[in-house]
Length: 322
Image (cartoon, rainbow, N blue to C red; front, side):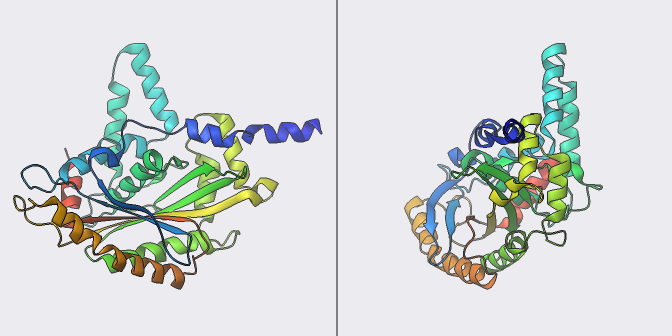
């Protein structure tokens, strides 16, 4: 009995440990994205849709650059393992020098691709939503595992977790697409996400490589949390029976409801134009969820209509070059 108690000790408070690992310092939805509708239940599924839009300033200009800059400021948190960040923070406290932090910032910037169609802005946007908005902890720092800045890591766009109310663990597999056409974005995003949820556990599942990396490189400097987390991914451990696979998906896409800078003077008209399109987005999401057989899986699906994805992507990639 005592031995069994010791075995269970590492993850007895996994929910509170994960909650304590969350990083704050502002939400992307505080200023840089405005909520259109949230927690929309998609009929006959367990998917909940959250719709946000870019804000308009007092001169009628679309504010996409501050959003890109907000994400750019979080590349260290996203791309560098917590242990190394903590080492740099400790060095700053002990020496007063920001040299190690500066080194991490340069390393994080170099991990991003310079490809013109890079989707890593979308991955960062998922990260911003997952941790600060939905309270999900990043459990693997995939960017640090890339072998080349010009290649994308093969696997989920992000892996996050929260303690379940039932005492188990909910792991959220992330996928993002920044496309011009919303229907293409919905299709490809959910098609990419599906294997991470619907595959049965085993060495041939789509998530097996990510699970291996979680076991080897869990993104926590607290050994109690890291070891407790790993038990849920060990198929020989009874805790793995309490692991629930969920999804967090995000699409950004072009939307003609925005006008050229200086002409977005009627905020109410913009809101109405976007609201009128939500039913079409929901229909596309529902159809694809059903096609991919994901009706029974919990999914957060985030829609971010933009004036053009290209202008956001180009500006974001330009920031990484500075």
